[in-house]
Each structure stands twice: as structure tokens, then as C-alpha cells.
Length: 245
View 1 (cartoon, rainbow, N blue to C red):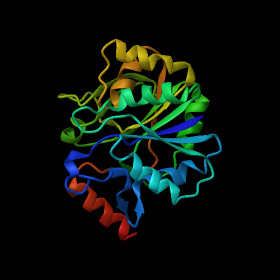
View 2: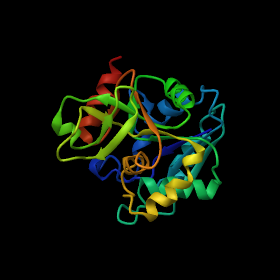
View 3: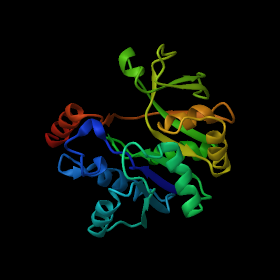
């Protein structure tokens, strides 16, 4: 299987910090967000390759970052050809772009490159492989306001996904869905079909929301916390938290 990290956004809400610099390479507690993700993934036996998809503006910065790193598994930096926030492809189109460019035909772990977690993704991969189907992650979120800004899950008691709603005005549960997904290789052809049938391209959750209506999907509750670096306030708070650990 391969791991794909989405890092093609322009992070306009973090300006001026990210005006000319990619958010995944910001440091949290003295280590970049991307280093934290890949260092975990690099120790997972099932993963054969790490892929970072970015844009034409930030691609040289990511290549310079990679030149100073040594990971066990090969890392590919993929430039999606976009140059600003107005012509960005969006997360779902970036997934398809990578699939086509690198001819990906393996199971695919997809992670947003702007989240910090305090757990390993290895149990999630084991969960998905045991279920034998595409899977998403979830965590309980008591705040209605927070649920209105993320994906929200409907599931059976056994965590089989019934539906997922991206940023619903009226959340149907307290299960929030962070941008961490496992796609079975047999479901990858459905990515193109999803876009052809009106799936929103911007948020990565749009793809899983569409997919769970087409095939079996299970949800894995996170065993720890995840921190979304969405704006300057959240960046400063998470950086302070990890710096104090």
C-alpha cells in the first residue's frame, strides 16, 4: 500500500505565515507537521511508499525539505501544476491526479498534511485490512459549532458507515470525521466516477461521503487526539502545547 499526504492547499487563513511557505512544513514543538506524519508512517511495515502532493509554488520547498531527510521508504513529491488559491484543484482532484500520474493501483492511505496527532496510524491500517474495505476515522465531538465545520458520521453500533455529511447545518451525530482515510484498491476507480457524478472536489471528506453510498465503509474511532492547524490561533495553541511536552 501507499500513503498519500495532501499538501497542495495555500493555507490563506494562516497568512502571512504561509504566504510563501507550506503549512505542512510549519514547526510544531520543534518538528514540522510533515515530519511528524511521515516518521510514524515510515515505521509501518505495510506502507511501501510515501507521496506528498503539493502545488507548483511550494514544490521546490518540499524538495529542499526532502533533500535534508532520510526515511526508510521512498518519498515522492508530486506537483499538481497549480499556482494560486483560485486555480487549485481541490483535495479530491489531487487524489485522482496522483493516481493517474503515478499509476497507483494499491490500497491508499490518505492523510491531510495540516493535522497533528498523538497516536500512530498503524492500528487504523490493521483495522481496515481486517475489515477488507475502505474505512474512515472518527472521534466524538460535543460542540455543535465544531461539527458544522467538519464531516459528520452516521453509523451502526458496529461502526459500519450509513452516511457521512460534510459540514452539515444540522449534525446528525456527535461523530466528527477528520481527514484520514483508507481506500481499498478496488475502490480507487470510483474516485473518477465520483468526480464525474458531481462529488465536491475541495474537501477530502466529499469523496468518502460519496463513496459510502456506493460500497461498504467502516469507521475507526481515534485512540488519541488530533489537532487541526486551521488558523493562526490554532497554530499558536498547538505549537505551545507540543513545545511544553
